Image (cartoon, rainbow, N blue to C red; front, top):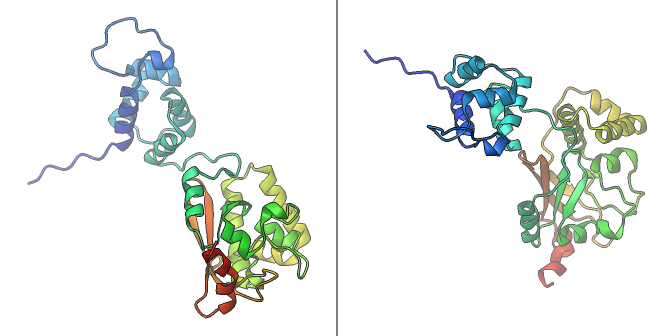
Length: 282
């Protein structure tokens, strides 16, 4: 008869590995005596984190598997964990990672390079609250260059529900041409974002403004539906391009909580191809 397999101890193994990579000098402790093994001693980490040595031993041995958020936060600080490592610490302990205070608004260099290299494909990078953070020249050609129109709303929620562009006016964002699936999905996304960042005052203010300004937003906000995906077939409102039709797609990057929206011309839309044609010869 086979022996029963030992239960995995992912949390304990991670704690031991992180403890083993630190030295006393790394955490400001004097190296007073010779060490038989590399890394912090268990009693040193326990003292830094404010927990008992016995409790830390039980965590490392897998005899305790559900530490509190406060203990995890203390261990993460004591072990000098990076944000990604602190996230992993929570996950292996069976808890969701801590909620950041504000919606991230930084575009990683790798994402900026990707958007630039898309060339003739219009692409924009959005924060989780649907504020436009970056775009490529094709995006500016399809819609309007946000740098040339600083007063145009750069937040998609605000452009749809609070301060929409006047008919024939400047639009730097694709507003879905009144597509109900587009607006339903957008509001559902915003509802999830507010749940993820409950302490972000700017985000709460955006929701309050949209609620006050739009009965349509209020109805969508109360709806339990998660909505359809953000992508689909849309028209663009470029002033010199007639009514070109594009396929919009949205790619989420969970690590940075940003979205990349791309706009590919529909095969049967000559106006769309005409809009981007000058870029092919730039």
